[in-house]
Amino acid sequence: MIRLSRRMFGKLAAMSAANSALTVEASAAAKPLTLANSDRPFPAGFLWGSATASYQVEGAVNEDGRGTSIWDTFSHTPGKTHNGDTGDVADDSYHRYHEDIAIMQALGLKSCRFSIAWPRIFPNGTGTPNQKGIDHYRIFTEALLKAGIEPFCTLYHWDLPQVLQDKGGWQSKDTSEAFAAYAGYTAGKLGDLIKNWMTMNELSSFIELGYGNGIHAPGLKLGPQQLAQARHHAVLGHGLGMQAIRANSKGARVGVAENIEAIIPAFNAPEHIAAAKKAMVEENAAYSNAIHSGKYTDAYLERLGTNAPNFTAQEMKAIGAPTDFQGLNIYTAVPVRAVDNARGYERISNPASYPHMASSWLTLGPEALYWCPKIAAEVWNVREIYITENGCSSADVVAQDGQIYDSDRVMYLNAYMTQMQRAVSEGVPVKGYFLWSLLDNFEWADGYEKRFGITYVDFKTQKRTPKLSSKFYANVIAKNGL
Ligand code: GBH
Image 1 (cartoon, rainbow, N blue to C red):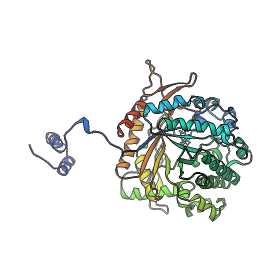
Image 2: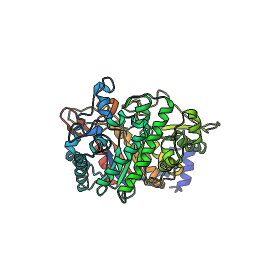
Image 3: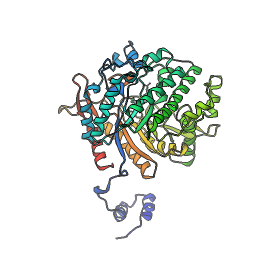
Image 4: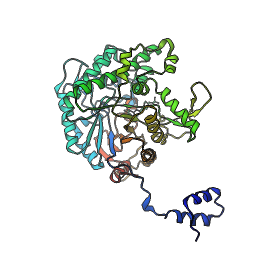
């Protein structure tokens, strides 16, 4: 038998498969073919978690002094959500959180990302706090900690107190300041239990969809100047909120969970990678790039021209103060290619045949979990990254035996996680992963039509059933690898 080095084997294999007998023999010599060594490990302590948001799971909208949020108003407005669905009951997690935590424990989760409903803490946005709101989240986080699950808390996942919207919402700088007051107060009350905070979830989503195209609450379609100003108030809210959290809770670690434009190179070639780095900055100029650099890019301001937002140097300093970690919510990928123009890149719009999951916007882009953390770490010099959301919708059906075999979700998760492992194994500082979502829940404008959970929820009975994907995830966590 001829013994070949791996390099030589590579060469030979690349030449052609004409002599297949030689190829097989050489392969066996290079590495024994066995099913036992197919694991791709993650580092010890990698933080596996799940993610949810208050309005999407809690229900109990009229309990314990909660105020009205813009999503109560919006979802109760005819024509705004699929089937007129609302979050009035959702997963009833406000009452069933013990059951939810038991599900997390069964999965072996190390961490749980959840959000606090601002109108439970300040029913009127500002002013007198509601003790019952604080009590609820204290009891919840104590239960998490008792179960050995680390809480990661988002302070704003889109449920703005309606009273503040009535005064202009994110169009007003007062909302940025009100947010900081709420964030500081809450971190002061819960900071002994919660160490990891995210100021906000997806600034780009709640501004562009809520104030730009109107498909989310509060359903406004502002002109370019007003929209640019609202964006600025959102990033300012993050900056002021971060200050307030740190001032009120010693040792707090603060970040933000942003749905970045998940830029990837068209393929792995130096010119496309260079283009992707430029695109990552410019395509995220209003949000993540402002937060991680304390600046709006010249190109962003030029693009806006007279519609550019009003801002001060002091505000930009608060916005750009270093975060302790960067949270990336990643679902799809935005491929770019190198182009010889002023920007140096062009977005590639996917053809109609590009595959997607049950939500038509949710195109498959597993390499986003490789490239985005890698590029982000480099262009924004971040040392700690969490994938704060990743997951997908499936057209789940309950099989005859009562189980849900969501093989497409398993495929999606497996593909994305494999790319994340690739990044981590190269030393990209991804420290944890939060799967969206633990449970099927209120999917905003899509109501209950789109299911993102790894646990099936029968919304009539609130019965929870783990799907095949939840068994897949438990297996990943148990072996800390794929
Ligand atoms: C996240 O948004 C949210 O943080 C989370 O609350 C949500 O449940 C989850 O994703 C799943 O959607 O209908 O064509 O107009 C992800 C970013 C922005 C993706 C809005 C869907 C609507 C596209 N989302 N977008 S469309």
